[in-house]
Image 1 (cartoon, rainbow, N blue to C red):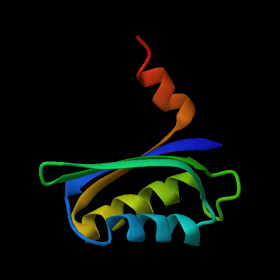
Image 2: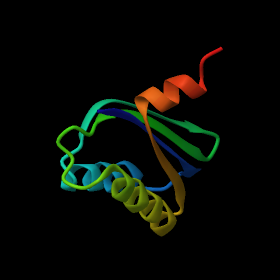
Image 3: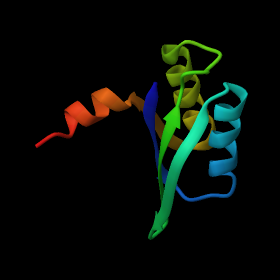
Length: 89
C-alpha cells in the first residue's frame, strides 16, 4: 500500500536521516521524496510503499508522530487513497 509522509518544522540537521532511518527499520520503501526550506521552515513530502512494513500501519503512524515530537517537527502519514480523496476538487 502506498502512503504519503509529510514533515514540517523548524529546519535543523538530521531530519531526513531520522525519518528515513525509522522507515528503513520498519521496512518501508521511499518511492519519491521532495524537500525544501521555506525561510527557516523544513518541508518534506515522501511517497512510500508500506506493503512490506513489519508493523501495523497505525503503529507506524504512532512511531512517526513520536519521532516528530522527539526531533521537534510534525510528521504525518496518510494512506495514498485517503490523501487523494481528501484533496480532490
